[in-house]
Amino acid sequence: MPSTTGGNPAPRPDGASRLNRLYQIAFYLSAMFLAFVAGAVATDLNWAVGDWARDAFLAARAVTSGHLLTEDEYPKLLWNVARTDARGLRKYDPRQSAGGYTLYSAADSPSAILLDERGDELHRWTMPLSRACPNAPVSRWVADRGILVRRTQLFPNGDLMALYDTPQFTPSGCGLVRMDCDSEVIWAFDEPAHHDFAVDPAGNTWVLTNAIRRTAHPQWQELELPIIEEFVVKLDPQGHPVQRMSLFDLLGSSRFHRPLVSLANQLGDVLHSNTVNLAGEKFAAHHPDVSHGDLIVCLRNLNLVVAINPDRAAIVWAVAGPWRRPHDPDPLDNGHLLVFDNCYAGGSVEGSRVVEVDPRDASIVWAFTGTGDDRLYSQIRSSQQRLPGGNVLITESDFGRILEVTRDGQVVWEYVHPGRGTRDGQTLIPVICGAQRYDPQQLDFLDRQPSAVAKTRADQKKGI
Image (cartoon, rainbow, N blue to C red):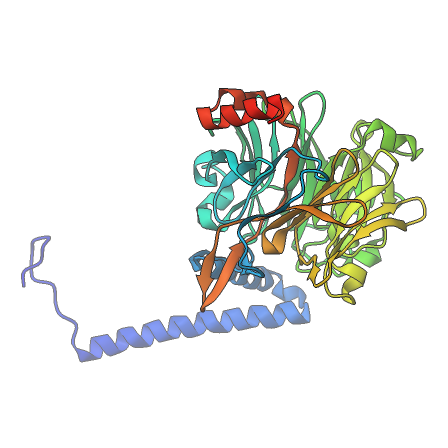
C-alpha cells in the first residue's frame, strides 16, 4: 500500500524488527520500574541521596491514585454505602423545630440546594469548577465529578459563595467563587482554597489555602520534606487577596509551638486546617487574650483550636479539648466551643459526637451522640450550627444526613439527601459537607422567584 504522504512505500517491519521493538519497550518499562522501586526504598530508608527519587515516587503515587479516583464514577472518598433506604424528609416536628430554610451541598452535583421546612427545594445554584475556575490548577487533573462544593454561604440578595474541594489531589483546595442567584459567576479566586471560609462584617472573606513546600521552614526543621504549608488569606469584597498569613509562621513563632509533637506529618499533611470562624464580641469577653474579630482556626491533625489576631498576625490563644480529629469549632456567646468530634473518645467508642466544651477547663457541658441504634458516625468532614432557642443543626457527612436536635437530644427535623449510586451491588450515597439554616425573612431574593416559591413565601408570611 502506498504511503499517504507520498514518496516510497513505508517498509513493513519484519519479525526481527518487531522483536527488537518489544525488547526496547521491555527495557524502558523495566528501567522505569527499577527507578520507582529505588525511589520507594530511598523514601522508606530516608536516604539523603533519595530526595529526588522520593519526590518522584510520591508524585507517581499521587498521580496514580488520582487517576484511579478520577476514573471511578463514584469516588470512594465522596460516596459511601447508604445506611438507610430513606430519602428526603424523614422527620419534622414544627412545634419544637427552630424553623427556617436549610442550605446544603452534596458530592453528586456541583450545586447548593435550599430547602424549606418540609424538605421541598426552593432554589438551586449549579456551577462546576471547570466553568467557575478554569485556571485553577486542579481543573487540569481532576474531573468535575471528583470535586465537591465543600462550604457555602448565602446572602440576602441571592448571591452564593461556594468553596470547591477534592480528596483526589494534593493540595486539595480548588477555588472560591461568588455567584448570583442565577448561578452566574461574579468573581472567582482560583488559588487552592480549601475546607472553609468566613465573611466578616466589612464584606472581606477569610479563606484557607495551601501549597507544597520543598524547603525547610525555620521553625519546622524536624519535618521531612515535602510538606503542605497552609495559609489564611484575606480577600476584599471583590475577591482580591490583600493579606496572607502562613500558619507555619504563626504557629512556629507562638508560645503554643510544639515541634516534636508534629513529627507524625502524615506524608506532609502536618496541620490540616479545616475551619475558619470569627470570634464574636460576647465570646471574646470570656477570654482575655481573644479580641472581637479574631479568626478561630481548627488544626485537625494537632487536635488544636487557635485564635489568630489578624492585625497583629499572631496566634493569641489555643486550646486542645476532649476531641479527636475535630471539625467546625463554633465560638458561642457563652464562651464555649461547639465542635464536631469525629473520632469520639479517640476512636475507642464507635461513632462520632457533637460536644459543647468550656475551653477554660476542657469540660463537656453538652453532647449528642445520636439516638438508640442510630448513632452519629462520620470519619471525616461534618459540621454543626447553634440555632436560635438552643437547638443544633448537625451535618453527618458520611451518610448524607442533616438533623436538628433539641437540648435534651430529641431529633425534631431530619433530612437524607436523595441522590444514590451503585457499586458492586451496593447502594451508595454521596457525602454532604455542611448545612446552614437561614431565617426566611432575610432572604429577599426568593420573592422574585417563580410563582410556586413566591406563593410559599407569601403563605409563610401570612402564617399559613
